[in-house]
Image (tube, rainbow, N blue to C red; front, side, top):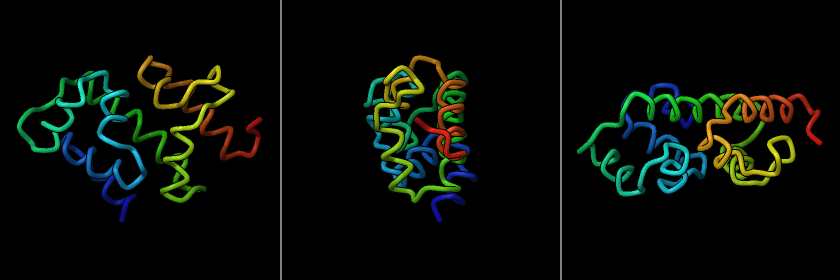
Amino acid sequence: MSTKRLNRAIEASDFVVAFKDYGVSQIDIATVARVDPKTVYAWKAKSTRPRSSTYSRLDGLREVVRILEDSLTTRGVGQWLHANNRLIEGQRPLDALREGKQDQVLQAAKSFIDGSYV
């Protein structure tokens, strides 16, 4: 169910609900999207819509989740996103995504799935 929900996410409110299944809170989403947590609550209530650059960051998070979900449980995906990661300078992937390091996070996710994580 989580995968289908995430794949069909179009509106920001859809992303908020879908990411919850992976242990990604509204505060985590605010971190990645570079917005105030109150903004994410408004998205969930469908009272506001994000800018296109924000959608791009949400889609970047979705891409990382899609890579990880092939090998990890939904809970495992959330744990990976919240853990410090050596391949991204010891940062949590969520924080690295906030800083625009999507390529590094994607590479770290692929390395993890390939079994070459150190």
